[in-house]
Image 1 (cartoon, rainbow over the protein chains, first blue to last red):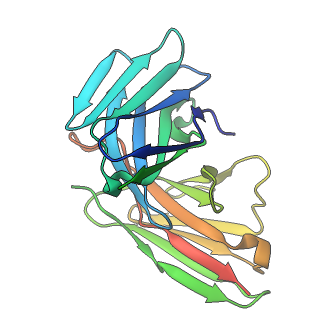
Image 2 (cartoon, rainbow over the protein chains, first blue to last red):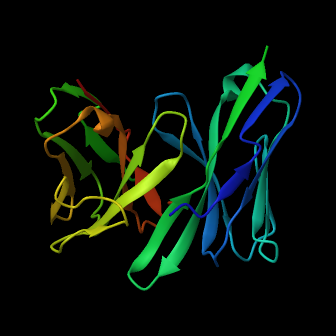
Length: 113
Length: 117
């Protein structure tokens, strides 16, 4: 079953603005990852944050993780039209059979030129 | 880096026929592979986990007799959609657990768009 819930489900902004997406999860995690998916295409891994990290940066991306609240956020700064895509958080959870990746519901981001 | 090759990238088949989707890990051994299904405008739902040389573990609600998974070698896992129906039309993505030192743990195939007519 899906573990992650994301909000907003859809976000529309103007080029140059910042976009913030949030993700909540239910169980303890090894790490949390963010992916991007352009319409009808495969997944692109964006960034991974480990359970003992609180914040991570990669280019225009900033990810935070609050394990006490079981939540994470992805901030895209100075957005571009090319950032238009669906963004998913995914939690890496260790189970008795091994770890697995479970995806959130996703946020559809539209960046208007 | 680790690469998973998934084929075909798209397939159209007639209702009642079977379709096989392949995922190959090209430069690493994948002891575990995951199969996801994604309907339009929805998230990826894990269908099953396959381990090399053993039976796949299916998620609740996924019919094992309909979605046959074979993981016969450390580099190849296949998903066969048997007696496909229009409601099986979806985007199927495989993922291999990657234990490389630099990777993020999972490498995804590029997906297969299945359309059943």
